[in-house]
Image 1 (spheres, each protein chain N blue to C red):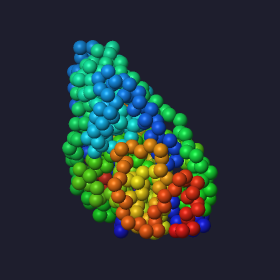
Image 2: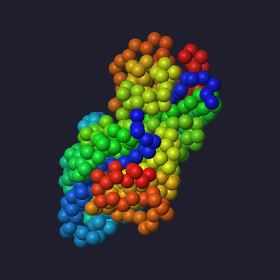
Image 3: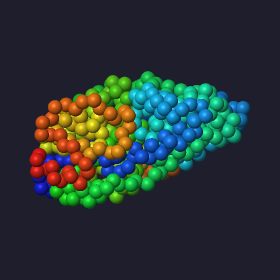
Amino acid sequence: MPSRELVIGFDADDTLWHNETIFENVHRRYRDMLAHYHDAATVDRTLFATEMRNLESYGYGVKGFMLSAIETAIELSNGKISAAEIRELLELGRAMLAHPVDLLDGVADTVAALAATHRLILITKGDLRDQERKLAKSGLAQHFRHVEILSEKNPPAYAAVLLRYDVAPENFLMVGNSLKSDIAPVLTLGAAAAHVPYPLTWAHEHVDELPPAAGRFFKLNSIREVPAILAAL
Amino acid sequence: MPSRELVIGFDADDTLWHNETIFENVHRRYRDMLAHYHDAATVDRTLFATEMRNLESYGYGVKGFMLSAIETAIELSNGKISAAEIRELLELGRAMLAHPVDLLDGVADTVAALAATHRLILITKGDLRDQERKLAKSGLAQHFRHVEILSEKNPPAYAAVLLRYDVAPENFLMVGNSLKSDIAPVLTLGAAAAHVPYPLTWAHEHVDELPPAAGRFFKLNSIREVPAILAAL
C-alpha cells in the first residue's frame, strides 16, 4: 500500500527514456536524402508542416511520422524521389520501432524508490503498440500500477485518467519533459507538476505560457530531484 | 444503475459499424494499380504476407496497413511504382481515416436498449486516434461506460480489462464478429460470447477451433438477438 495518498504520473518519451534523439538522427538522414532538392531548413519546415496537417488524421507516433515523411519527400522532390529511397524511409521507420530503450540518467533508481511508497501511473501518447513495447523493454513496467496511452494529453484526457483511478487533482503530481503535454494541462486541473527538461524538444511541444500555479509547479534538473519535492506537496 | 450484474463488451469494427467493406474497396483499387505487374491473387497474397511480417512492429489499424501497402507496391513493381501512385496510396489511407461511420443494422436500437439496463464496455483494437474518432462519429459513445482500445485482443488482454473494472468472467458477455479476437479469448477465460458474423472477414481473423464452452457460446444472425440471450446467462 502507498504510504501516502499522493499519486505520481510519469510521462515516458524523453522523461524516462531517450526518444527525441532517435527522431533527430532520422531527421538528419532525411535531410541528407533530400539535400539535392532542398536545403535542410526547407526540408525540416515542410516535414513539420506535413506532420501538423496530418496530426488530426494520424495522431502521434512513429507510423504517422513515417507516412508524413514519405508524403513530404514526394512533395519536395517533385515526384522524383525513387522507390528505393521510399523503401529506405520505411526501413528507417522500422528501425525506430525496433530501437533499444535507453533510460535517462537516474530513472531506474528513482522510479523504483518512488514505486515502493507511492502509486505510479505511466501516462504517455503515441502508437499503442510502440509505447507498450518500449515500456516492456524498459524494465520499468512492474513499477507502474496503471498505464495510460492517450491519443492526446490535454486537460480533459488527464481529468478522465484521474477520474478512472479515483485520484483528486490535489493528490496528483505529474512528472514530464513537455510543458505543453505534461505540465500545463495538469496545472490547469489543479494538480502539481514537475518539469524535467530534455535537451531536445519537438517543435509541436513548445508552449508560450503556463497557467498560474503557485506552489504547484516545480522546475527540476533531473528526475533524481522528484523525491525531494514530495515533502512540499 | 445496471439492473443486473452482467457486463456486456462490444467489439467495434464490423460489429457496430462497417469496416472490412472499406478495406475491401481499397484492396480493389490497390489491385487495379498493380494490375500491370501482377495478377490480383498475387497482389492480395503478397500484401497480406507483408502485413503479417510487419504486425509485430506496426500493430493493427489503417496506418500500419498503409505502410505495408506502400512497401508491397514497391516490391511487386520492382521499384517501378511512381511517386504519384504512392501519393495516391497515401490519399486512399487518409480517405479511410476520414470515412463516415456507417452503423450496422439494429446497432443503434440494441446498444441504446442494453445501455439502459447493463454496463457496456467497448473493446477494440487498432489505431488509438482512429478508433476514438469512429466512436465519436458513431453517436454511440454515451452508451459505453468504458472504452478500451487494445494493441491485441488475447486472453491476457481481456483478463486485464475485466480486472480493471472488477468484472468476474462469469458475469461477462462479449459480442463481436471475430471468432479469433472477440470469441475464443473470452471463452478461454470462462466468460460468455455471442458471435455475430460479418459478411467479410480479414484473413488474419480466421480461427480453426474454439475452446469448449458449453452454454456460454451463442451464434447469432444479428445484434438484435443479443437481448434475447441474456436470460440464459
